[in-house]
Structures are given as C-alpha cells and as structure tokens.
Length: 211
Image 1 (cartoon, rainbow, N blue to C red):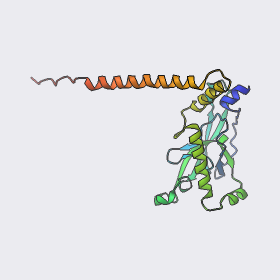
Image 2: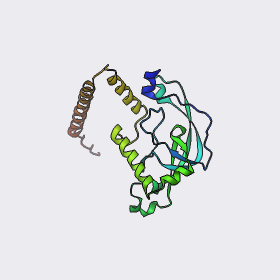
Image 3: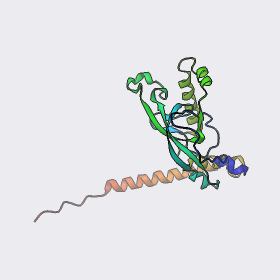
Image 4: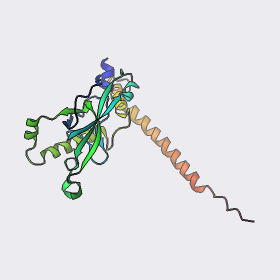
C-alpha cells in the first residue's frame, strides 16, 4: 500500500531488456525518488547521476532482494554493463592527463537508465563543461542529503526511509532515535577500546628452548 511504497518505492519489474548493445543511455538524475534498486555508483567516480554512456552488454536479471525483506513484492530488473568515458565523470579530468580516452564499465539496473535524446544532448552541451557541472551538483546534493560518500549497503537506504516514515507518523521521536544510536555507538566504542587494551597487554609466551 501507500506506507510500503514510501519505504521501498513503487513496484518496478521487467524481464525483457529494452536497451540493445551500443545504445546510448543516461543515468537518471532524479536521485530523490524512492527506488528498490541499487544506486548507480563507481568507486573511482562516485555516484553516476546524469552520466551518459553506451550499453556494452546485457548482464542478466537482478531481483529486489533487499526490498522483499521489507515486504515488497518480488520483482526483477535487467542489468547492463554500461561503458562511461572516464573524463566525463571526474570533476577535474584535466588534472589527470592519463584518463583521456579511457572508459569505465559499470553494472547498472534498467530502472536507473533512460534513452539519450540527441536533441536534448545538443542543448545540454552548452556552455562548455555544463554537463559535468550538473553531474557534480547531483552528486553533491545527493551525498549531502543522504550522508552517503559511498553506496549504501543493501537495504540501508530502505531502512532510512522506514525510520523517516516512523518519525513522520509520530510513532517515534527523532531525538529518541538519535539518543539510541549514540548510546549504541558508545557501547561499541567502549567494547573496541576494552578489546584493544586486552590485546595490548597479552604477554607472548617465551620461545621454547631447543634441547
């Protein structure tokens, strides 16, 4: 129902890939939408919202395992290997001459892809570097809003949605959640400190003398 959709997003399922190899695609930039599928990310370039690339191959189907753990209906999405020009992803590619002409291959689910409109591409190409600046802005806004400097672990973003909904419905106070998390972190830090202290003072057994 409505509550479930606010946590995991709408039901999006497809078993037939709609993009063929060599098709030009763009990663959707509406990062604030609820979605059951992994955010498009590469360890070198970060989040890929708004990035353009070419489909290299169809990888297979991925199930919405994390969303199902929250009660969502089972669904699948085609997964593609998409090749992105590396110099279009970096904030300042001119500082690394070696990246010119290089590409990176990233697995992206179809729910995050859209076909490239050639006319729109022409409009967005001006002024120079405008596209890169938009991508940088998308990434910055997303990471600031969600406190992600790396892709969330499976189900982490859905857990965040669930907590936000509980607060919205006044079923729990944000202050209580903060205090609980802080107390849990304190317990964990105390345990780690205690463990490290014990490990430091463990005496090594003297080496046995050979007869």
